[in-house]
Image 1 (cartoon, helix red, strand yellow):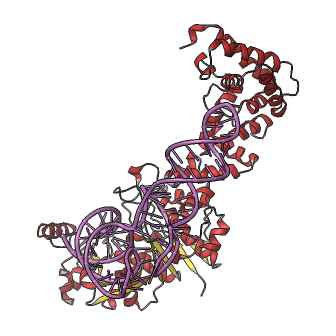
Image 2 (tube, rainbow, N blue to C red):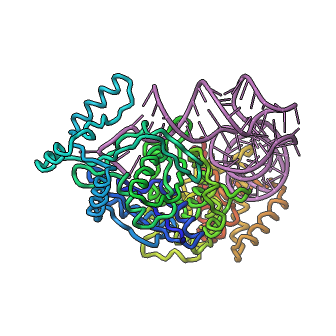
Image 3 (cartoon, rainbow, N blue to C red):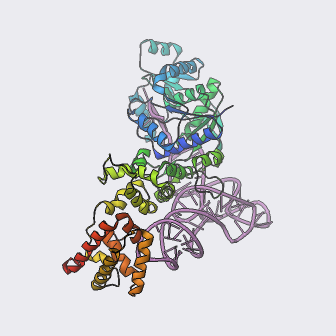
Length: 482
RNA sequence: GGCGCUGUAGAACAGUGGUUAGUUCGGCGGGCUCUCAAUCCGCAAACCAGGGUUCAAUUCCCUGCAGCGCUACCA
């Protein structure tokens, strides 16, 4: 039997980073077994439904490279199906209509909590006689359909957590159909998983406690139970609970916008709560597909570690071919006003400039800042031009010498410049820092930047000399020194 | 409160009834060096606690504690 799995988010917001990992695990399993990956949108809660979420979820999945084979299927378009199966449950005596009002249910819960009892439906409508039931139905009282939890215990096997058994007395008579005619998750997902012939249900750990109810439902229908697999949540930090909006960026779209590469996010997420069993840390999607197995998914919630994501992202940025990276940073440069949308990014000046900062980037969004001095000549205070253990006079002299040397060089390329400047330091008995630091500072206006030779080359002779001369005048007017 | 799941360095994961308990990020130190980054070398850093079982327990069992989840006409 071929593998059929699904990712079934509810469109109540943008795709969450934890949701993406659940989707990833489903995707990997499907691809590994040449199976089918289905996207199903569980939009049965009309109160929480958000029109744009479904689009955002799809956009995020595509960005991450998790293309689905079937769907998106919207549950809201299938309510007759759920109604039919809920009726079947009623006919089989596994479910019953409940006429209790929300007000009564709330009162009951409060009373139970006050007595420190577990809040649970008191099953009042279970006891209705057929006649009463019919009468309420005929008179059109709003009602829900509740499942009828039987006596005994319920057991199931989970791929990650192993065998689990619970006493049915711990289970509530869960609402299956709301009074508005829409199913709840418990009925909706189960009917669909059956109809879509899902072979492995891979979902968040938060569903583990309600899985026994689902098992009871499968039995009531007489359906085969798919393999069940719950994956732990992603946590925000020690004692901070599940990663959520209040812990900063959790939306996949937000990571996309911040300039994280999809390969990096996927690689990072895969290793968060799963391991291949060896020491490999860097994976292509293809390698993940080969190595993946549900059995090796961890059973503890993993804390989301931004530092490691940054490292992984930096690694992938370094691996990206220059021309490709240029395309990826273009939107950021445009947004920063450093280039216009019509400009081509594939020009020597930009490519060379980018090359000098490529290994310093953790995210694409850092590009404008790292590259800023290439676009705008910096204001450089005298204090920045003078390295430690040097005086302003010494720097003035060495910079002036360097300027006259550089103005004689025609082949303004890094190797040539390096050779000439190093020779200059040796001949004049100058420490390298005394020559190169002020040059680099004058060109970039930054304490930390790419090296002097490469910046000289990228900026070119004219612009470089212009900036160096300007720095010299700054050193000539002592008042600018701190 | 009840029920369930889970506890290996700061973080993510390996691993084992007898090991110098491993890898990656992060931290610290060093090399390189015009700064930062990258890269290279090195260091520190963990088996939640208490009971069992056993010749031997981080590993198996129990209890405690802690974390997480669920406890809705939300998913």
